[in-house]
Amino acid sequence: MTTKLDSEARRRIILDGYDNNEPLKNIAAKIGCSLASLKVTASKLGCTRTPKEAAEFRRGFQIHENKLQDYYRLMIAGQYKSRECAIILGLIIEQSSVSK
Image 1 (cartoon, rainbow, N blue to C red):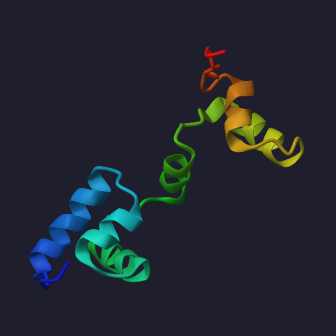
Image 2: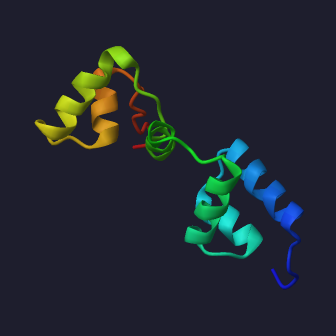
């Protein structure tokens, strides 16, 4: 952005971005700052994601509390990827390709 945003507009973009679960890179690009600066500002505004929310956002699915221990066991001991563990535990349905 070529124009400098005032502090209120900057706060509104950050709050809206976090509320809409936008990726942090996109929010930082909108306000024209670095990722670190965005995280500091968001922390001051009190709208940061908890570590659990951040992990769920990166994975793209939620893990129920009753399957959390099994999920971690598959990830660590079984050395499966996150998506593979979710398919094994039935958290997401595998989409098979039908085109042949």
